[in-house]
Amino acid sequence: MPSIFGKVVALENAYRELRFGVQSKENCFAVREIAAKTIRAIKEDRDRIYTTGPKVHGRFEASQLDLLSKWQGEAEAVFDNCERMAAKAA
Image (cartoon, rainbow, N blue to C red; front, side, top):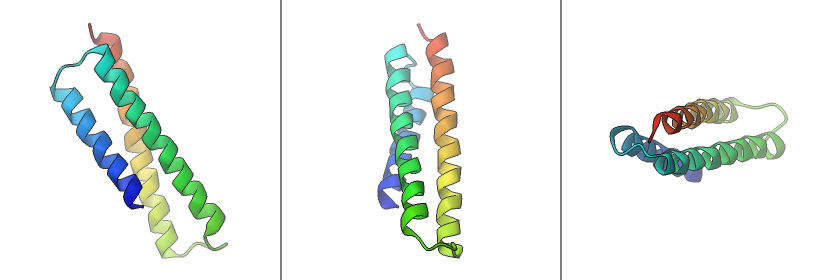
């Protein structure tokens, strides 16, 4: 889970810099690519929990899955917002 956490933090920092910095198409696409990689990593981690975890998930696995879902929703929102910003950027 720490590697996913690091990717989520890096995405949040990149998005914050984009939001309050220069919003060029290149910058928007770069942050969108970070969001896409983060979404892929989250999905891989979720698949790992389902395939290697116990058949009946306990509260530890359930809390991991809840956190991954939250982070995936945030990364997908950043991905969509970057597309909108790129459309408006010069």
